[in-house]
Image 1 (cartoon, rainbow, N blue to C red):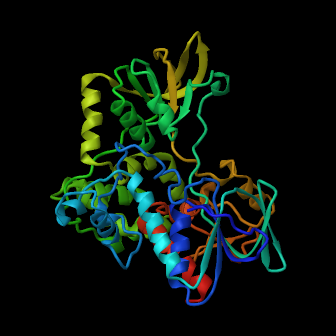
Image 2 (cartoon, one colour; image 1 turned 120 degrees about the horizontal axis):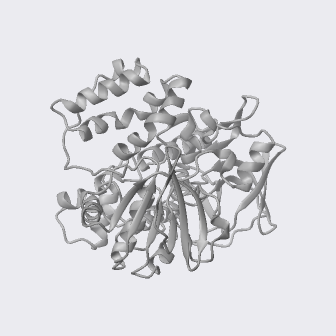
Length: 457
């Protein structure tokens, strides 16, 4: 879908990033526009709509949410289900398909299809530039953007949809390892090429780890898989659909962090499954986060976030079963600790771990996979555009250094506390303000809000 755009012609809106957030924003602008509007999307990848989450081509990587919860449009909750049914790829009754966890690769295709439909019927236009934005400066009420290939682009408004970047390996010595000994969890094809008898260490035990283990399993891996994690916790499983628990939301919003944790534990010990308690909270997570004091938010990030993650970001039951089977069979081993250093040891890699200040014994391995997740602190995201905007004070770091500061409509707020009328952010850059900000329900609402603001709708 990438086309060559005239980067010299001014755009009304430039969308920086062509992953899910960028495509949802462009789709909403195209759907809602009632007059000509020039939209330009700048994305380094040749394929838009994938980002990191949906870039995998491998069937074992499933969505972590059933089909019925993945519509791109809040006003059409069955739209993804309709798309899959119309595709003819699934010979299942509609009700059964709605509850399936389908391959993630299908979702990027769905987003591109809905974008193209909106593009075909809109008075607005969309051009896609395959490039990266490295600099943006305000000039006479517009943005002047510099691309990495030397081209420039002018736009009246800019929407930052930069998505996720992996954290660097949290250990010394990674830069000393030979090629092929250190991989990122998102290097799906490279992980598939790991020899089946190799000893593999995966650093991190969240959703990226799950992807890596699934790739190894699908490739017939027979060697040991060692997972190193500070907390030793893996994502938990979804259960069959059930009625959300009855949670006293007004009372919960008035409580501090400790009281909330206590109340939720009590609710989960009652008649309700803990999953139904989390499901009841799901639509209110942003309000719950924003109602915490700054100190309680900091305590959450230090002491509660890992427990939150494994309960909130659940995985398909069949995926969880595969992991448990490997744990029980001894192939997949969880080692609690912090990876301190990695050093070459002949053709292998030596690991130095620490747990509670004590050195941990770990076997040498053949390959390390960095599955520590995404970088949330904007100062360390290694994004030239964000670094430049931060350095000039055009944006400011969000709460706790996570993301950037924004208002309720998604406008960026600068270092002096002023709202930037023509600069917006969507998705991961709003985590500090909203906490829940990267799942499809939040992305689609943010995209719609920004589009309506830009169009004055």
